[in-house]
Length: 106
Length: 263
Image (cartoon, rainbow over all chains, first blue to last red):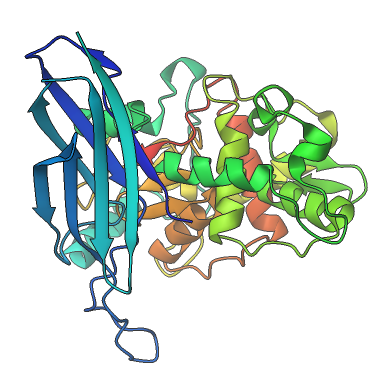
């Protein structure tokens, strides 16, 4: 049951610097750990995260095995126009999740 | 390093005049009680306080979905009997473990959920620490956030609370430590760089950064027992439930923080 928590302000003034917070549910298995029987647990991590603001990419991050489970990514942007933020997480073993949030800019 | 510090700590305890086996515990006065929240850094506190940063909320969301989804032979969801958890489950977790009239013993929240599944939903019980059981129990406990713990008020629980207290006070394991050695007598000190807390279970199930996951109070207690090199009781063992019961009744009146975040 993958799920995301997104925190984007519902409204902002034009030109305001706003903080966007995202939390994605994921185990982030490093690929370095072994089971009690000595077998390597295959790597299963999110490899990339991107955010688009009305279709334009404003933030992108590559993720690596050292990042803890349930990655929490926050960043800032300037509120320019009313519209939608689209978030996308892509990872190992076909992991692909999206979420979106809208903002009203006055 | 951790090993040597632990050994030094154990040696210190023995040197402090605890050669006699019973723990000389001075229980914590009500006014001095502190949640584990106050022992951690403000940064960790901020993760707990912000519902969009608190990873425990991911389990709460899943728990809400499970609450409303049908399970077992009865084809009933939790919500079909209990309706909206926001009203029906408010304050419920603050009173657990509670006395079960049929079993004639205390059951904790996880066991109550599984009893409900087997008796009323005709479903199989969920395994301890499984994602679904943690999700359901944290969703139920979340409805009590901010409410005072009421566990232990039921007089039928008295013998169980006493047994839990005895276990808390009893020295055990290769390091020959009782829970009270740390959590009653040395809660203002550190053990291997980590704060020793007062062991008030105000935020369970909680998200531990060390676990990178949500976990139950039983998981925490079992880890403590392994830490003093005692044989940990199995999940669901009556002894663990009695210890949970004692800890919760010891924290009676303190507000529930579920889902808490701890280092």
